[in-house]
Image (cartoon, rainbow, N blue to C red; front, side, top):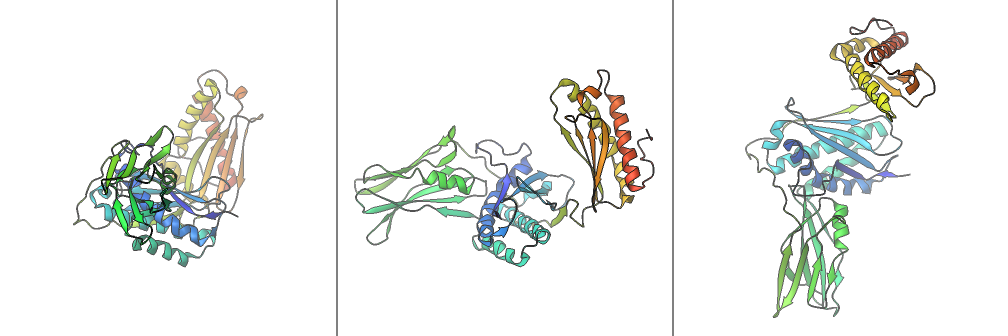
Length: 392
């Protein structure tokens, strides 16, 4: 059985000179979370927590309406892909120092794993060691390669990586004399990619060119974005460093050291989460393979936005069920609206083959189908009329 072993702040942007996210606050948060996630993952892997998937993927957003860091994790069982969590940060997040930002993100990651542990039956107390593991390493992920021995066997070289607050790695070469273990040379630092896995890939390029020069390709993402060169050469009895970076890296703000951390709130989401507020969700559907289906889907999405409007959400509060999920299937051979109910979730499935959509304005039919959804929900729950839809 797989174990949960990796926390991944999505995405890992391939180019350090371009934003990870178009929103500058989210960009800072995603990049600041990478070192925390790599360190937490190292400690998490050692716990060997049984899971259906091996990854907890974090989606990080900027929410100007917040005055705290808010983290939510999906608690419903997953069968493929990854566990999923969201971290929303306020505008003031970017005004903190990198150290304070990292600490807030650590509390979010630790809280998310703790809430997930309760839902999955893991030992919550064991996760305290993961948090302490990050703190003991000053919230900066570091990794060193194994030794590469020179052809004359007098020296060995290693690559020392660190993942900095700007979300990208730095690497330097170190040459050690083998007979007494003395470090005889350090190179300057070169820019590296932003994950522990990329550090390990880059370390494979560590190479001696004869007995007096060693080099490494520091930036390793994909073949098209891979390069730079880091070297140490013995010249005239002295080791000399050479650094050629593939690109520059975008900086992050230094922040105001007088500003304290913001509060961090963690909650579960999904039908399995007791703290999940009652909610209507249109989860989409498909396949959208033709223009006619696409036009109808746009119209139906508009109708579902009315269905899940604030007044619709208020209507749903009296259903006694946490989640109402609606999805539509255009590959079905029949026309209809059906449902499946469990203790905390009502799922509504709309079957609409393309042949049933017609060729005129799709909006009236979309509203009619939405009204059918409302009628079915009322039958299954006993709710009164939806404020935005009449009975069909």
